[in-house]
Amino acid sequence: MRRSPRIGLFGGTFDPIHSGHLHAVRLVQRRFALDRVFFIPAAVPPHKARPDLASARDRLRMTALAVKGHSRWTASPIELRAAGPSYSIRTIEAMRRRFPQARLFFIVGADAFLEIETWREWERVLHRCAFIVMTRPGARLGAAAGALGPEWKTSLHRIGRVKRRGELDGDPPCIYFAAIDALPVSSTRIRALARNGAALKGLVPGTVAAYIRKKRIYREKSAVSPACSFPIVTRRSEKSR
Ligand code: ATP
Ligand code: MG
Image 1 (cartoon, rainbow, N blue to C red):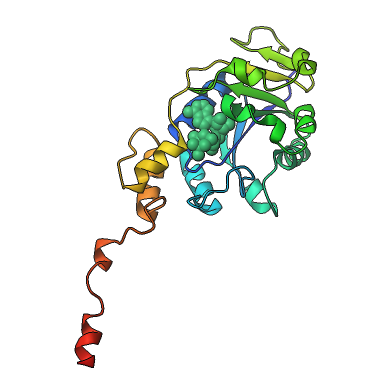
Image 2 (cartoon, rainbow, N blue to C red):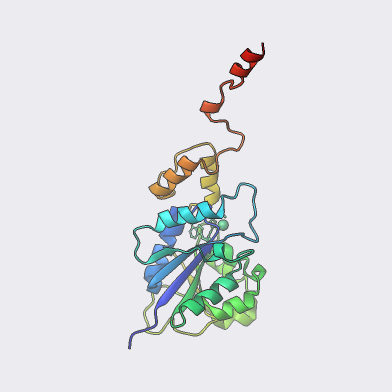
């Protein structure tokens, strides 16, 4: 019998999406045999409002550029279309309605999972969707597992290589911890580099780097482009003389 399709939901601020995200998803997708992965930029990240946050539109566009050419990856506008802040519970419920036969796996880094109890209706979230928690440099899986109280212990599973058939077919709550060779890349570092116009080679796909450069996303707001730095007032002041 054919198993139900497995769909990964990878939410994030993606400000911008980077090679650490793509590499981690590639590894997790292979290990968990995910048929599709949706990359879901958050429209109004409740925990993360920063003055230099790129617009949701730009973050979605960069995400779309990054997944282009991968037949099993999709950049999803679902959280941009919903009114108000992005809450994972809404996204999960909407995806369950859209794919009633599928098994859903929410993918998060260990650092993000540490804050799970701050998520809106977090217990319901864990009951509606399996979770894959993956290593991220600087955030240990053990610490992430400790984010939940002892009553969750039977729902936690460490997944090395998936061997047994049906190993991933339990009903939620199922929280799978996957140690992966993650890359030490973060959006914070990329924004800092982009602020001064530094090269982003290897940190984001080339198409994303070109988009950031062209649209001057993350550039210092006070930075005046050379074309505007000449005294535009000269002609008027000549006239008024
Ligand atoms: P920022 O520095 O702005 O917080 P970020 O690099 O952490 O950005 P996010 O958009 O916050 O990127 O992360 C989205 C998801 O991807 C989170 O679950 C996060 O833990 C995970 N993640 C981010 N970078 C990596 C990485 N290098 N390896 C594995 N997972 C990652
Ligand atoms: Mg982050």
